[in-house]
Length: 206
Image 1 (cartoon, rainbow, N blue to C red):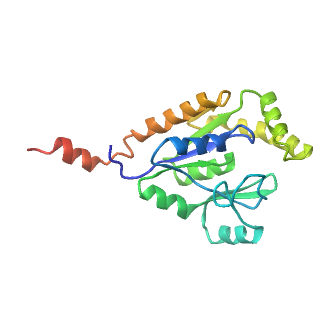
Image 2: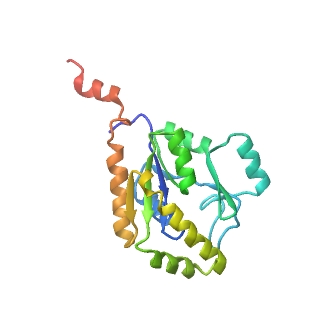
Image 3: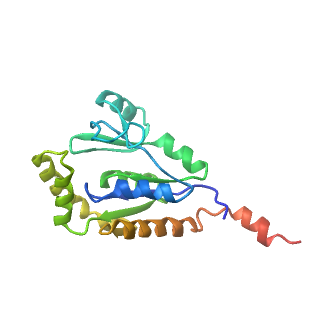
């Protein structure tokens, strides 16, 4: 079906719930959707690649981009800055490509205010115990960082009512199927369909 514009899907979750992995896998399997790469001032974790997982910049460059209005949303999380490039997103959407973002709840609120038509999806872990196990299993964060992330996770989960969909990431394949189904259904929404195409192909008198 022909569409006039791509849709913006905003995915949030507490750290360790698996939102980034879900988004990246979805983009591998589903044509026509791109995982937007966020900017961040935090240091890369082992295995992370600049320009693929994040665009890594220093505090000075990030602040300059904020002043220039280059971010669709930005926030400070756990002492680090994260932001989504307005230009990158708009370029893809105007070209008919769907965009999926994984951002924190602050960023999701900013995007919903600026782009009310965006679709918000919240990813939950199976339980707080499982979340703590996942964070501890990373072996890349100090104990105090993990405790801070657990406290923050509870605050973020309390925001779930502001989202359009909630997915529990217990079994990865099941969560991926649910995310896949949401994107597929939203693509058939009346707001993205090219109405002139329907008129020309089905309703024009012959």
